[in-house]
Image (cartoon, rainbow, N blue to C red):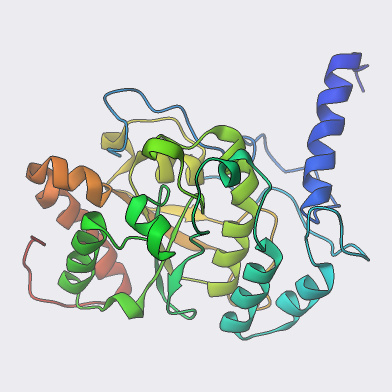
Length: 289
């Protein structure tokens, strides 16, 4: 093993301390070189809010013996991994999240934590970027104009909003609806991964560049990310269901982008039709308005 300089040792110690605070204690070597845990990518001006080889599972988790200073309730975590009820598992995750003060967003005007909403047994999960003003006010993801369009997209697939599960990469509104910072994504990511593992969806749809690049850990344009399937394994989690270990992930445009550029709705509809085919859904073939 090559010797580590003092600066790198400090950086590694800080990263290990960060994961320990989230209840992650065991780390295993991967079979092949992989990118680091999901973080928010840098989005160029042209890509901002318009919108990776698929990432594999990152770290294995063992449940530590006691609750730690971060507020990670390890006794609840035991229940989470010991239950087959996804609704109960989601309640446990929400309790562990608490009135989160783990990143700076809680000090920057946040009104509410926007955890997620929908069917805890959903086969289809949508993941966006971050809450906006309406979501921050109501405490539910996708309730503004972009949310109305997402509802129409879901309806066009032959489903209802309550049939799917909807969440975001981060759970607090960034000031001015700016793109989430890397640290904010790193802080929220373990909770989102646990949500995915609890719900065990068959398909995840990443809405927009930030969600896609964060989940897949790939820095590529939307044109390269769309129109194909990825295998997604939530990092740092384990499922209580031996029949589920990963979801299929597809990428499409964020509804907010479609409101700004309605010409791309037909392309988004192609993405949704790909998802419908995979899930065996049939619905009137009409591009969502």
